[in-house]
Image (cartoon, rainbow, N blue to C red; front, side):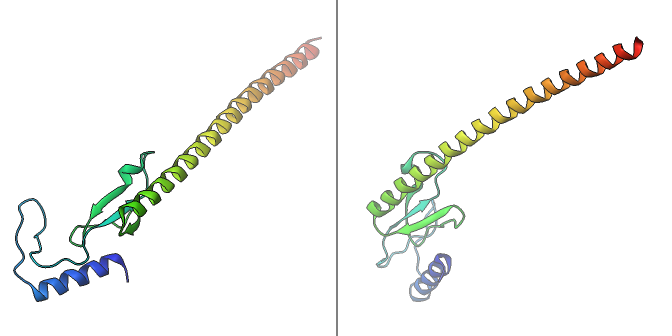
Length: 135
């Protein structure tokens, strides 16, 4: 069962048994009853090298975007550990990409120099042939 389906099932069950949800001006309605699920932690895919930016505390009533979400954890320690691991992996992939891009730039520069040398040789060869035909 997907997390979104699970979330909808919980909310439907709560609404069926307790329709008197308390409205909140700063977000979704607050549930006045017992919440045994409590909060959990969502780890998103890193976009920077800061593991703290990838861990978010949430509950079943909050919207969890599935795009960019790596996992859902009950313990903040587990979420933080996984976030650090993902951030390290992200950093190493970024470093590898930067090294590859440096190699590509070096190869492009070498290719440009070779083209320039080839053009000069062709120019010299065609210049020599013109001199020979004039004689």
